[in-house]
Length: 469
Image 1 (cartoon, rainbow, N blue to C red):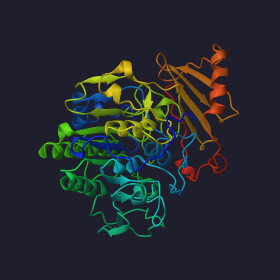
Image 2 (cartoon, rainbow, N blue to C red; image 1 turned 90 degrees about the horizontal axis):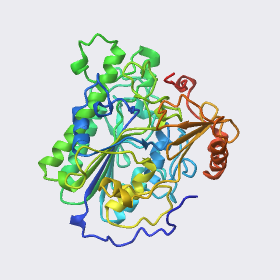
Image 3 (cartoon, rainbow, N blue to C red; image 1 turned 180 degrees about the vertical axis):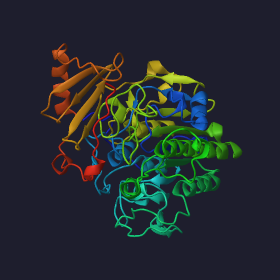
């Protein structure tokens, strides 16, 4: 394992006075593609607030999600362990264990108030995986990723309690998923209110706020029965576009997400906190083709191949924008090969302490501050995934390798700096690279029962990989 340090010390004293520690807000969209934002080349969907973050901060070009679907990506983010080492490696009904250490626990030990609003996906009611058992002082949202398909649910969770809502969902499933027949309270709107309230309450303290908003994920169940998998109160500026209703809804969901980000920034400015807050914005994986959505219409994966569930870059290379007014040069770009696995190390570094838990991550704070010569770089980033027959991938420098099925299949080799769409497999021309990747694929992981269990997704959620060619 590529562990940096190995001593756990959650009771370590903070190295800076509490008031000198910057707030940390990490915003993660759900199924937002590399090409879905204006600052990454999108021309049809309007995202002015997120684009403004890029104008005022740093845009990463080679940043990767923890996985290509929801739960394992969030596990990587929270624990700093990649999918070769973390506990939750697939989209099952699993719970983080008491021994799993999260970034929230580390920041809480540093004196931060910790809160999450949105989708958790790493633990269910009454289990060790509850956010409030994993370092969060406050939680509001969905615990189960399938419940999060429903944007007009009958309940959400606040801390450990179900909060009833006015929506009506006939034949509601065990985990709360289904199709609303009466749509009264839109969950993203409720999430905005909870987010702003948290900022109001904690404005005088250093805080870590994890905003795992659920847009623009589809409502798969609604699509199966009604033919409409989008969920927005109205189509807004897209109402009169000469597009399908599905495409209008998809664009409206992304723009609603953008509005949510704008409200967060506005509230920080109202409290005079904008210079004291580091804002991260990213996505949990690439764009989806679920519930009738066609990612090709908006070119949602940009120049990349693959979508959600692929390990080509379209499934795992995601936007990352970081704004820290007064610290990060406005309009900066970074080509550092990095990922959500690095967030734990980076957050603890921002808090002013040394990371003292096992991790596969590396702090990219030097890059944020413009100190590129001090930036430690990864030997490689690694992924494994068990749906669609299983697959592995890794990125080292300009090279990318994909293997299907994992451990036994042929290895594909791409120079993603020259071939971002991964169209030209160089395996035959570069046998020495194949040999190197063969070794890394074996050593980059520890065994997991996920390899045996595979996926718990339903057949209609299994999609072919969208390739540029």
